[in-house]
Length: 324
Image 1: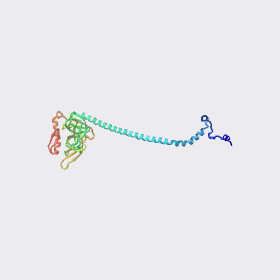
Image 2 (image 1 turned 180 degrees about the vertical axis):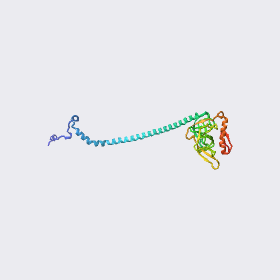
Image 3 (image 1 turned 30 degrees about the vertical axis):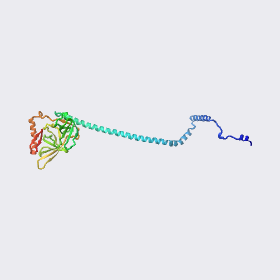
Image 4 (image 1 turned 120 degrees about the horizontal axis):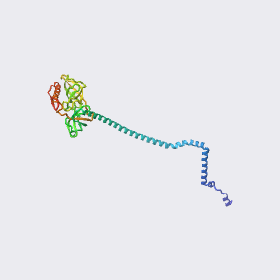
């Protein structure tokens, strides 16, 4: 066979056969797609087919979206948890602040009540009266002393009586320019003339120290006094105004074979519960009462004590004392 015949019979492989161009294919497919869209929208031919395809592809869609949904839920849970913790903390802080405010209101209301009661007491007597605040108690509790924020700069006088809304608290025993030292009536060195409100019986009460009690010793066994009797100031010492509450008779102890009794009384006024007190300067010892009447009252008080103790009473600084 000749070379020319061989070249004439050789054919080009199908792989290299050139078909329609890419642009022609694109135009054809685009027209076909548009025709299918128009046909489907008008005649709904592919609706059933599309429904079947969506049914079969739905599990795959769920599986594909599962990681994102899981991540979103976890993020929402963590944010919600943190938000709840922050809100809980904020609410706790608000509750704590509200409780503090409520307690402050209760304290202020209590102080207002005390001040109101003190203002009522202020109108009962003509002596100079000064409102004071308790700063602190002395470190030695056995001596029963406190410090108030009024002194000589506020015209407080030595020996002034200290009274709260419930009764007598103590007496000013030391003065400073801005403060004063107050010895409570329960101090063992303190003594105060008292009177039984029920029958006018007068006596001298002594402090008992840390027990927060007063003691009236050496009274006759047949004296008219009972448990529960209210004790008030008699006013014969010109220090404590008459009629202020001192305390209440708690126990009456009969001394065997001695013929006298020993009385213990609770204290009406108390610095442990009150913050404000009233300073009442001593009464002037002239022009208050008729001297003859005062002498008769003092003699009567001495006669009530003398038979029980068998000792000679004497007066010092307006307070009846019993000599040892």
